[in-house]
Image (cartoon, rainbow, N blue to C red; front, top):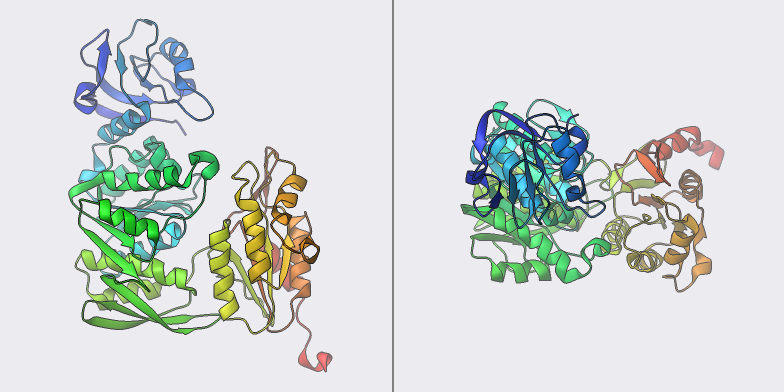
Length: 498
């Protein structure tokens, strides 16, 4: 697919980039743009993005040779015979140009952005479900894929690049959607992928340590997350978790109206867990003087928080509480989010995306409360990612699980034995852990060890259908591997066990 945005009617670039400096012209009529020099076609505007791995400024001459009618840059370049528009941040400029070429779709639809360390995907799906329960047509894009009101496509990114986002939003508008939900990653915010998009609502689920290899510090990571609120319209509103310290600090800084949710702290929308089992839970949802029970097949306090965020958005849009609950209960499964694998085995098996210490602790804590037997955890850590979290993940699993099985996640181009050793370094008693580098063998071993009443958590990859080893992306799905093993090793009849 060609990268970039196209429009039949031109836009005037000066109207989009009012803070730009011009060389060789005072304005430029643009009908198409791209940030990939290899895909420049005659008449395109080329935007030179300064990326983390490469720099588009190196390819401006190539873009002109291919027919670019103008360049957007953020540092001086030599004269190349076409107008040059210099801006402080080409990533932000690219997003704004793409949205303008797409006809500013976020001005024609209510857009809800969801960010946070944990819970973005489930919260986004819950918000969409609540809105649909009230009769709205909803588009959605995030980790699991994109839905434009008609068609679904699997995701390559949590938050797509600016040009893909603009195209998706424009399709959602043309397909009659009234609302769109965007899962917004910290990378997407830092790289201005949602530049030019006006948000009607912005949700911050929580802030935990993650992606510090990219952001450098927890404070910088938090600042990146908070950039979502810069996109709120003057009439927009924020939703934050009152039980999260970073969210509380964020609320104090916001000038926009904000709703808070919580289980422990005072909040506008709150809940208390009434029943919690291995296959469902019930909690009492409270909003003002209204209280209503919610029964869901998705378990854990983290799911209650996600539900509260979605409920807050629905209530802010004037949806009746009964319809909000109907929407919350309608979502009974999210791929790879404490997804239960049921093949007739006499023990629990769950696949979860947890790949940080905090997420592992939440998943294990949930399963511990609902498990009568042992808790077995299969997990690893991704290569070429924050190495500091690896020993913390090991320590969490040693603390919360009865049996720890350390295996490969997505090692990428990092030696797997290095990753495994750094995880093992977090154990106080490393001899208690089972190290099985082959992930399929590790899953099989854990399932073979499980006894009636036990529970196996397979953590780290969740919904992913691949494993990245070196530069190869190999087919691999934890759910498929677990199901295959369980079907090939059916439980013995009760008579045979006596």
